[in-house]
Image 1 (cartoon, one colour):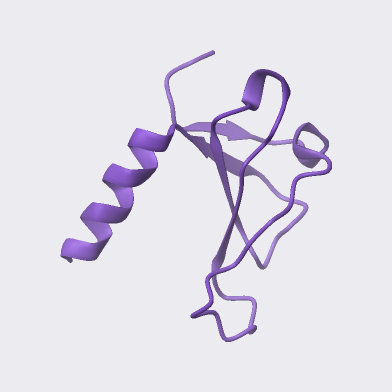
Image 2: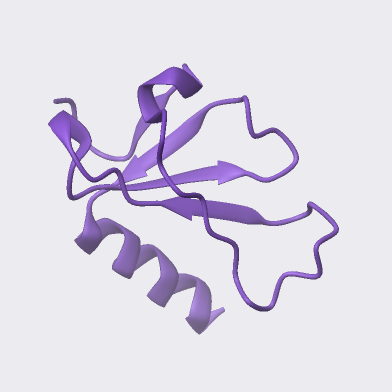
Length: 76
């Protein structure tokens, strides 16, 4: 696998995952959604997509990369 984050362009690669939104989301489709693929080569990674475009691409992050990203956002 290439260095993370990696882009998944076909939603079928993440078929059957459960996408989640933050409890802070207003439901206006202006947030990101996350999912954890449970099996196969993507297991253990975190997928992130734009809620306005659920059929569009998603980014894949390792758990450490996602933790670093969210910590950085929190500091802003």
